[in-house]
Image (cartoon, rainbow, N blue to C red; front, top):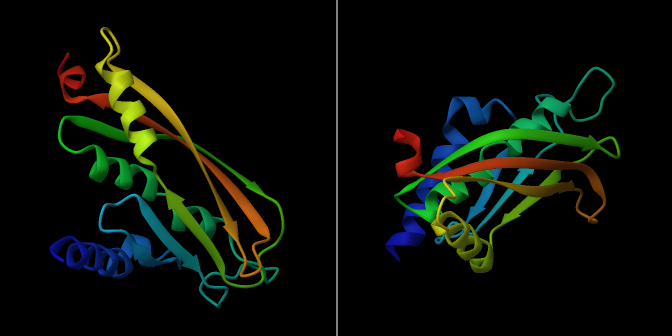
Length: 157
């Protein structure tokens, strides 16, 4: 129950935080174990660009922090996690609310831990992809994030 309350408070915190709020995106769900997050980007006067479609900066800004935050929360202490690179591919102009769903599996987390526990491996880069879709599931944009992960020991070396 405490984990559920904490995830709801994080959701509220994201939605009130000025830098995130300015993107126009809204967090709709954070799983208590941080392995799933859902967001939406409404198509409104704050997110609309000059030609009437959803501003690309709003789309990217709304999805930007989540894989890094999820990995920080799920890997726990002893790991350093940074965004390293991003690529966004626009596929269809957004003229309605768009949604994104971020997921991490137990297998992915164990693979990261295992790779970083290998002798000599101090850091790795992982790639994650998330689609921004409309209510019908049509993909409007795909974002590929590269996340850098290292062990705490490697940051001081």
